[in-house]
Image (cartoon, rainbow, N blue to C red; front, side):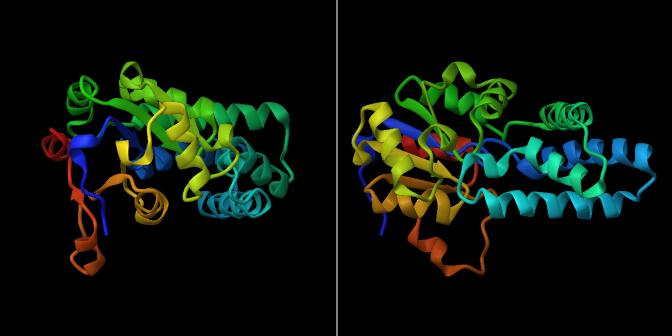
Amino acid sequence: MHASHTGTIKGLLLDLDNTLYRYEPAHQAGLAVVLDCLHSLSKISKAELELVYEQGKQQVKRRLHATAASHHRLLYIQAMLEQLGSFSPKLTTDLYKQYWAAFFATMKPLPGLNESLGRLAETYRIGIITNFVADIQYQKLEQLGIDHLITYLITSEEVGCEKPDQKIFLAACKKMQLRPEELCMIGDDLAADIIPAQHLGMETYWLTPEPSTTQPEHSLFKTCSTFYDLEKRLS
């Protein structure tokens, strides 16, 4: 099912969230700051506030499905405050800034990312392909300390569609001036990253730090558990 042409690979295309770092701890740190602030202002329980946040998030996602804006934390917080009857532009932007400050402070690159990617960048063109708004993804790359290694960034915001839509992968090929069979896609999401890239003829590595033993389809895909492992496989 997977291509086998490592010798022809000229570029690496990497997902960002949950591939270069663990998303959930960073998100929970950002959300905790938002809930703490609102709890101190409103005395509404944090559990209830989190429920309203989730409702606002789902409202935005339904309305803006499959667009970069559907991930925008400013819109989530705006929808949350509107439901609480507490909306103000200043409070919305203050909470938004606090969310990302805590998020960035908690982000940690996955083991081997900086060292291995630095060495791989000596051989391969390095691109990032990601479903999110561009400005935040730029900041994440800087926070992870790898922005100087990235030659190409392809976001769903600039392309107008999201993975697994093949248009965003083809946009990456065009930007990197490489054919699909000259690219290797690395990501954590089988449905969004790996399968659509394979359908285009890219080599793929599914990054699975804790591979499940209950999903036999793992045997159909090349996997790696760390960036050290990935570097070894690509060297």
